[in-house]
Image (tube, rainbow, N blue to C red; front, side, top):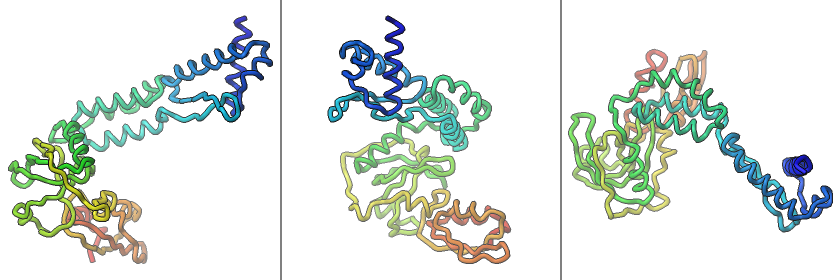
Length: 313
């Protein structure tokens, strides 16, 4: 009896995996059993698939197709990340140096535990162990994930927030009431982009009537409060962080400007990847003439860092 059931269940399972429709009456006739037995076999296959999710990361769904009067495998997809995918994500996280060491270790552990099939977890852990051990955390050593989530909720709900923010230039803590519009990440830090309504505060800005937001490093926000007051930005005037990111360097805000320079280095692709709005205007003898549209003074830092291979026109 056991061998007959094993052969029957494996036969039905193989048929489902092959993309065939399984009909109770046909299978009952094939194996000399009643239809309720086939139903129990289908239930056993579903239980096996459910139990297999944790170890393989593959989700199979056996459904009853009322139109064709039979069972079929609805879809197969990967719930878990592949070894290469999770290794790449862990390496990117470590290289970002965005979190204090305790938070980084916690995030990596959860990623590997939840997103990698159990049989591969040890291998992935060993591949990142040395880099994790020598991880250098950011100097601010601040845990800010909870406050970043609150900021995200305020952005989503279009709620004004009030923050106590430590300025970089003089370390003074100032109070600001702002309209938060996006959270961004760049060069080791997470940033809040927000609009300030207070004209008195804006008097000290390089561009007083700047239509683009002010940038705040989230680890420098000492405290925040979400206000009951809400703001509205028309869809046509919404802040598009993707377009902003193309034009900003090192998260330094400022006016929109165009630059042109000559590049004589070895890898023009590195320049074009660094400046997504860049265009090659001309190339002669390995020297490229490049133009780009950028925000603020951050571009000056990048240009100086290139040394003799860049000549600003």
